[in-house]
Length: 377
Image (cartoon, rainbow, N blue to C red; front, top):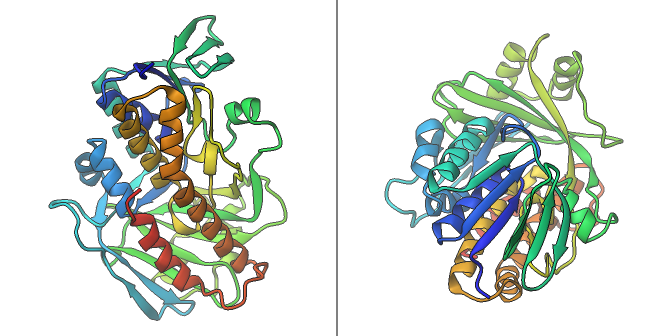
């Protein structure tokens, strides 16, 4: 039976992209989100070339560029702020699209939500899937609001703490703490900050600067942590300041200017998901962070979810029942997503001095990661 009707669980980046990709292929789509309003959580997000191309396929790249910031490549500095390396921009992009883009998560979510609504997806908020009767032919779902319905496909895009993953795959596949966390702070964009600026530190985790819009950027750093707890207190500016007080250059100037009392800093632990294949069971598939969440070190989490959605739409359009469609989808996505997750974790462990891999060079891996992530999927 071909896939004509799909349920998407989760209204984040991956879920909205899946709804768009499937709807563009003529599938009747229903998206549920446990929050009352889908909203982007966090500060900002970088879109490397593969994410830009996925957004073009979803029909949102122009609007993301209009509301965000387009650029090409970046700069790598040492701890003192001296330039070490210029990250080149890839060639062969469609006319009018930048190699990279930055945008706030809230703006990106609003753009994706608008596109989802325009295409006619049914959206139900404040609702969860309570019971799923899953077979190879269809899945019947009972919702927390008392409704129920049957679908040819159920897409689990409910994030790193996916309830669907734990229910259908097992509670042993919980998010795993990496030993690090990330600190982010929105700041006015300095005129000279036109690309990503990365600072490699000799005696601690790395940090950097990222443009998000004409008037907005964010500064970030990573830290080694003992536990996966979230930080949410008034002392965050002082803690972040202490972490990066030895970093020079533009980053040091901005630290002195913005890392002061009252600064609105967001801290989150870096966690990942190690889920063996298959990532699909019967008529259910997991995409994005629900299947292969990675640490932030290659900045590819959202891009992988977007690509998952685009490829899923392509395979559904190619025809076949859910098990065949989902196996073809997994054949195209598994190696790339796992490589991104494994390499991101290696970079994370290397910063902590916990990677037992002689000859590992972080800069080389980041450059190679950018190239491999852009490869067709």
